Image (tube, rainbow, N blue to C red; front, side, top):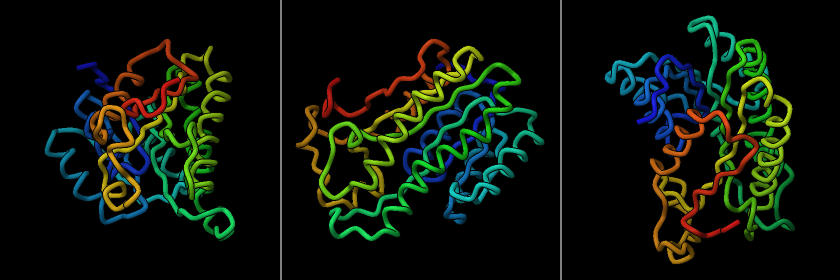
Length: 242
């Protein structure tokens, strides 16, 4: 396994699904973990598992749309461990509906959490990464940002925005030894996906849903690599081939 021994990582939405698998993979590679989740009760179990692994961990019950709370999380992580090396922007929500039926509040909630939250967290960690001239920012996008989907205009707009944001930030900080990349998963076995009646494995050329560990493996690769930046890595079983 690639080693991230001594690195400090923040993972948003880190107590379930892809976020939790990412937390465990980063910890397994040696990183110290600060994890956030808006559902506070879910944090304790993940924190205990990290401690059982012998890994240092911090928990933050943070809504990534709260600019002040995001900054406080970053400041506390730096105060505890002296730096932030890796940021995984994973927190996200869905509120699906057809455009003509979509409530303004549902449009704004998805954009605020998925896109604005990614921006707020990225902006907060960059000063530390620039000072140390080392950083890895990994944003979780989605295959639907590339192929479209009925009833998900808000979600797709947010994830397409993340892909654009990834490229912009990557260009700004590349000479500081900071890489910024996105991962675009397709149908991944999570609680949210199991509750989606439109999620069908026959849509995928490989004939199955992906696993959260298959996404987390790519996070580890990007965290350890210094020459991949500004890219969107597709983890989609062949649904979208670019």
